[in-house]
Length: 287
Length: 239
Image 1 (cartoon, one colour):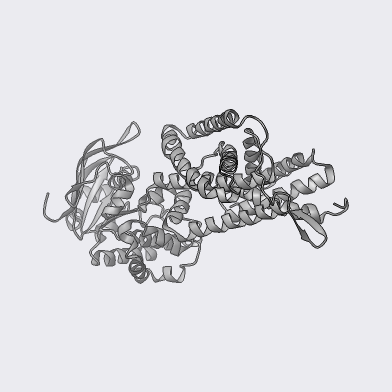
Image 2: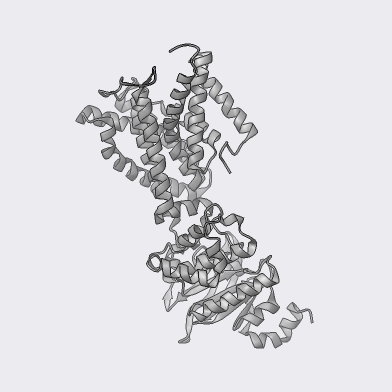
């Protein structure tokens, strides 16, 4: 990398942004629909990474192929968490689900610790170290995969929300719960599906995160932080906003790394997040 | 219970938390009528509609729809049976287009199959909604939002339509149009129960009316009779 070349970090950050948007998607969806800040979201992403790791080591599958098995598992788990934990907690008070989410986070971290040990793991494949070129510049192939995956999941979710009755019900419940009930929407069931879909996005995010960076049982904390940053920058309630947020965060991070070194890059990211929170609390693309 | 009754409420008590809002309320809605529920602010009108819609559960008494008990059913089950509520304050889904609001109205299984047919009917009642179908709902005027809320309710293919404070905050000419639409809707065989504060207008439009005061029904009867009732004249017309 030429030190005066800022195009490389911009492209890297842009591509990385697709992954960040993917990580943030589930957090944004659950908040938008249920007004719940799912503190376990980062750990659920990492659970996705470990599920893929298990399938890769046991079955020798490609991590992306392993999604065929992990997506249904995460879908059912998400529906169950909403139905048996969060749904009941919501009946108690508005704060109870937050505490339940924190509890789920601790359980997942410790379970992963017991099962997988605190050692750092990664999802390695034959193409892990492959590169692609734009002109003379060389980039990791995994970053491009992240970006493509982010776009595909976003488009799929957008189409689902816009074209199916269930998708419309999720949108309706997020805009006005009472009116949604009066339209014959079973909001409890819709919440279950929204949580399940958020978990599917977490499973996909977990795979691509695991193929790009090493992970440990406590990596969920940094995933959650990235998701928060993305959602704060982009603004809640809009898929496009989440995408813009992810890309902004990615570019800020890689540019900061380029100019100030990798030790300072996240510091700069957090400063930008704080500034946006102060100047434009609804986010760049929020309502 | 008479042959003609569609909905029968029998002596219900309803609470908001620990505060009682309705005391021993009984009410009958007959097939094909326009029935009004009149009352001042906080008299319990919305509470009664919410009890019918399943958003609130009576602690005492029963609610029957087409001869079947519906007390204790969830709101979505009640919509499925054919009761739709057009809520106070319109409550259209603000950030999606008019057409999307209408489609969400046809969410229940019965209504989905009739979606295109229902949509045409809604556009017949409210042609402006066809023109505005791609417009984001929150950018409509108050009157148009009320038309959308009623249209969305019609999309559910109801047998009984509950309409809460339809004319609140709207200009008289807009209100005239909405009442005309209500008569057309009734003409299609849909029974209407509506809630209003404007007594004079209501007694012109409804076949019968119930008067609710601080959570109790104090008077009921055909509108023509109520218009001549001294208690109504004194309490509501200031005569």
